[in-house]
Length: 310
Image (cartoon, rainbow, N blue to C red; front, side):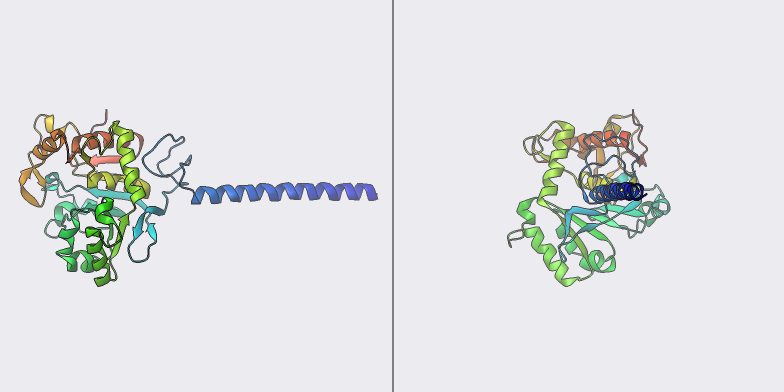
């Protein structure tokens, strides 16, 4: 009887150790998945397998912490998690579309540079959750700080730019402007893109196009930086007013201003000019071709005008 009881006790202890070990391993894996920035097998995009992708993955939902974007005041990384994101292009395609009400229904609304909403609400909506801004546009924002950083202080500003303008040693012209803005407007939520994230966006360009950005004389657009961050932060993306890479060569295309709020320059003319300039230009048409490739694999849709993905 004693041997039987002892054997039973030993068996129970072994089973308990195994159970505890399995539970510990499971908890370790869960913690690793939630804190790691490596590609995961499942995310809100519904992927079952992952090769190279131009954004991070997380379990079921996008990562909430985005380490490539640092708050200027607190030095903490960006915290952002959205379901449906509406990204509004600055294109003249947005004029006379009456898409404002639909846009404002999205959980997060993204705008670029200094694109206004006042006076254009019927076409582009009223709300702004995230505004992604080029270093070249920051001076335009600080000319109207009461609106951009006080009236709309619930907006998250993500500023991207090269090291020479964003350096923190006192010699970064744009960083200095932003620092003064933060000191004057304590509620402003201003994040700057880290140098590592900037390099990452360059790497994505080379991976997708086969061309080195610097050697090819290319400038990435604000739309490029916007989509890369949005694909980290959003489960679904709907892009408004962005034309595809073949639009300007199609029959019956709309001749619209380059920006819906700035008459004078025409969109397709600007696109061709930049695409054919050897150095120091944006590659808008090339980027749109890349965006089409991303949309074939993930729930990204383009509307006003609609894209047909072959």
